[in-house]
Image (cartoon, rainbow, N blue to C red; front, side):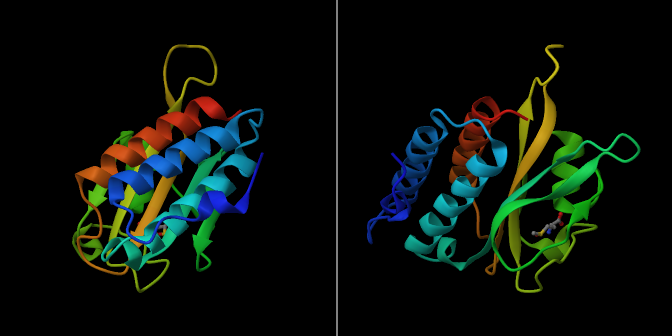
Length: 182
Ligand code: SME
């Protein structure tokens, strides 16, 4: 049963507990629902409210959401998906910016200072740090996991993210990979 209370986090919640709630609620919301638009939209809401309930720098998150694979045969690229925050660039080529680098390398990008990341795409000039986690799934049964989407979170403070964010966002990526039809 979907309830808006899922996005309420305790005032004194720890980062570990906030992510645990995000994961548990995402798992619940994905039960019986495999549509990626629907599931990523609720995951973006959970992430946003989790960050806003935490102390700085987490509460300085200014964008949290997803880009998904645009499968157009002539030009596979990332295209804007569900998110919370200000409007953002609509498409990103593989290999471009932090998101495109995560997609082409299939590796999490933890960026303490976006100004030090070559090719960073400044959708929102307030962003100072960023973490991007690829969502990988075997969509054609070949056994090879391919990028189906990425999780992108921006923070208006330097060093907004650490290994704890990386660990939990990678868990969320795994959960979403298996919970949606891509
Ligand atoms: N900064 C990203 C672009 C997406 S926005 O942050 C939402 C990048 O360099 O890929």
